Image 1 (cartoon, rainbow, N blue to C red):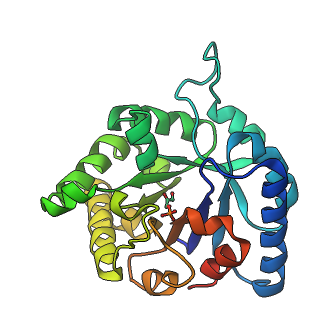
Image 2: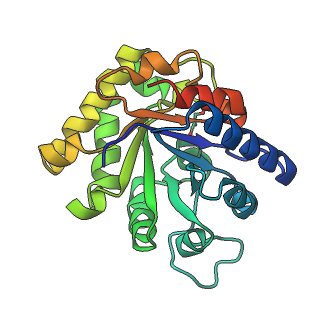
Length: 253
Ligand code: 13P
């Protein structure tokens, strides 16, 4: 279902007390300032904090998401975490294909396609990230590159599976750099992604797909970005670690 959507990717930040405090602040601000209809909100803490954050969230609205999982269902994979385990501790969502995992952990499109199936089979919805480097953009290869990420990583799914996926466009050059894509740059790529979904599936599925922007999105620029016709919300890194900023972004529709 296409909906306004804001997800916070906490990355490898916060201790347990800090995570409890941040979640408590977010829940309180949301109750005060966004008591009615809200965008779909998701918090994605690191693994050891999931249960505690889930407890603070309770039934308050924001859903719980994780940042990674292993492609196998279970077994002798010391140190790894399964999608089923994430589901069992209350996760509804998981992030997949983040550029930091593609870059630092060598996750390629083929592996992502495999992980995608594992996550969906475990009952998780997936926030599937794509995005180009600065070199790719400067070489004018952004559309080819993202088209390939989608075709090889995502489009092996059935129609029904595709409905469980949110796509996030995160230009690598905008992540953690303070350099946001302009709203026109974001819109151009979001429209392209929606066209690709329409070509691989159909116009109805494309019109129903939620597409988020991520990369230095903050309380100052969110409204302008979210006002673009194909931008349905944001995947927020740094600014999701501050309750005031995360809630202000959630109010930017
Ligand atoms: P920043 O918002 O810190 O740029 O991070 C974006 C991101 O990578 C979210 O997944």
